[in-house]
Length: 260
Image (tube, rainbow, N blue to C red):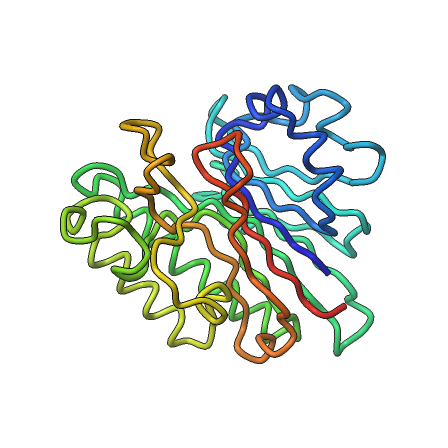
């Protein structure tokens, strides 16, 4: 089972850059999308069901052109849910697809999550941390229900110095604040594994680059997109990669492959 996650920075914008052709060729069973900036009523038939191969499920923000998550899946999930907390559902920050709910040893919940940006001077840090805490509780609840989880998305956090090009210069900036990094420690210490770092300890591996100063060409970036799994599921993860050659957004996709 191949699961891709991508912050597209506007699904209608990325459609004009070949998104539909890309998704039909990417080989993924499930594609998690963040920052859709649209509701389904604004989307073309091609975006709602690419090639007739994928079913789509959207969680949109009440505010037009803002936030939003989605999941594309070749297989109909047994159920699709949102966070269950209006503070975050009003911004469309979470879409959850549950699979194989009738097979206890193969239950999997794939989560597409768009973590809030804490913004300049930590203006939304309290909201960000509230979301992080709620997400950990949600993951714990899913695991308690017997699901293996794959938490995909733009976490808007660079966890460690290796995860951004200029850690010293960014210590006071959103996405690398001590409180955000501490939550990532809490999350991983609670039994969740950063799949990419499980396989790769190399530096200069990033998933987001500023549009300014030719940052992507120079590979001056941040790794803020993750696919984390519960500890008991890591042995089923076959690979976790950054698809840095895919363009169309300021983020690139990431992909994890798990045993069927």
